[in-house]
Length: 318
Picture 1 (cartoon, rainbow, N blue to C red):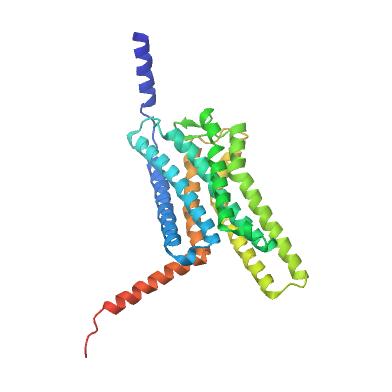
Picture 2: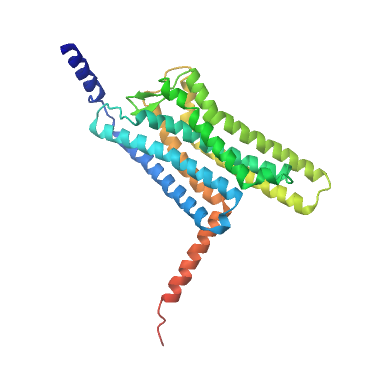
C-alpha cells in the first residue's frame, strides 16, 4: 500500500514539477495565440459571408468555405495547444493536460483536410476545363461527397499515431506531437498531411497548363478558350496560396529535415509552430485577396452602410 502511494505521489510530482523557463516562451505563446485569433476572425467572417450572400452560393465558393472550415479547425487545435503551453509556461510547470494528445491528433487531421481542400479546388478547375460536358462531376452533390471524403480520410489516418503512442508530450516545448526524428510515423504523417496533397496540386496545375497550351494551338472557340484561361488563373491562385503557406513555414521544414541527420534544437517545436501559425493567418488574408466574390460582397455591404449612414445624416440649412 505504501509503495503504491509513493508511486502515485512520484507520478504527480513528475507531471507537475517546476521547469526552467526562458523569457521568450510566453512571447512566442502569445504570438501563436494571436495568429490563431486572426484565423478565427477571418474564417468565421468568410463563412458567414458565404452563407448569407446568395451570390456566393456556388460550387467554387462551397470549396472555399471548406478551406475556411478546415483552417478554423486547424486554428482551434493550435489555439488550445498554445493556451495549455502558455498556462504551463507562466506557472513554470510540467503538466500534460488530458486534451493535449487529442489536440496533437487534431492538428494533423485538420492540416490534412486543409491541404486536401486545395486539392479539391484545383481538381474542380481541371474538370471544368478538360471535362466541361461532365456536369455531374461539377455538381454540388459530387463536390460535397468529395469534401466529406477528404474529411473522413483526414481525420482517420492520424488515429493510428494517437492510439499507438507516437504522439507524446514534449516537456521542453509544452506540446503533444510526434517527435522530430527519422521514423516511420513522422514520414507517414508528413506524406499524408503535406507531401501527397502538395504533389497532387502541382500535378493538376501542370496538366492544366499543358491542356490550355494545346487549346491555344488548336482552333478553339473564343468563349471556351477564355473560360479555360480563367479557370487556369484560379488554379494558379490556388497553388500560389499553397506555396505561400509552405514558404512561410520554412523554419518548420528546416527543423524537420535537420532531425533526420542530427538532434534538432531543444525548442524546435516552439520555433516551428510559430512559423506555421503565422503562415496560416497570412494565408487567410491572401485567400480573401484572391477570392473575388468575398471582396465584392464586403465592398457591397460597406457601400450600403455608407449610403445608409449618409441618408440619415441631417442636412444643415444655409
